[in-house]
Length: 150
Image (cartoon, rainbow, N blue to C red; front, side, top):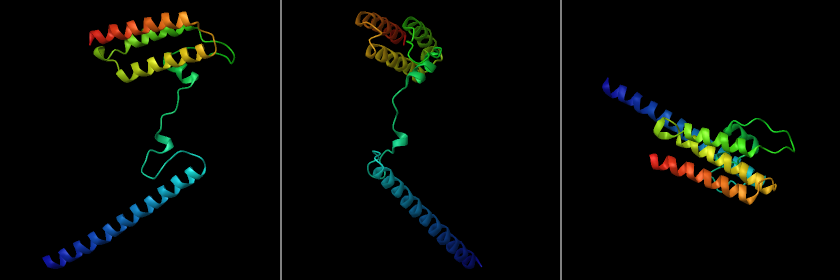
């Protein structure tokens, strides 16, 4: 009786194994076909098994930077108030100090959002080099101050 049970168990394992192997084979074929189709469409996916486009980080947008810093929406053609950007940055950066329960990840996003807005303002000649250096130094001081507390 034990031998019969063992035989049934082995047959069940073989059946489940063959189903699983077939499913993995089909999934691989499907993923490879998607990668080839995306490559033909001009996407930079590379060989199957490499990072696909959906996993690559996308550049930040002005809207995202404004949301991260909690800035009001700016109408098309208007300029972001840079003093408000700096004020929001100072407050949010301090409030997200990892030593006081904040998040290093969120601090990083706050820094990147501020840098993105600075870059856009400089690109549009809305921020002078002197303003940028002054605010950049101020940002560096805040980062250094919080780093020394760690």
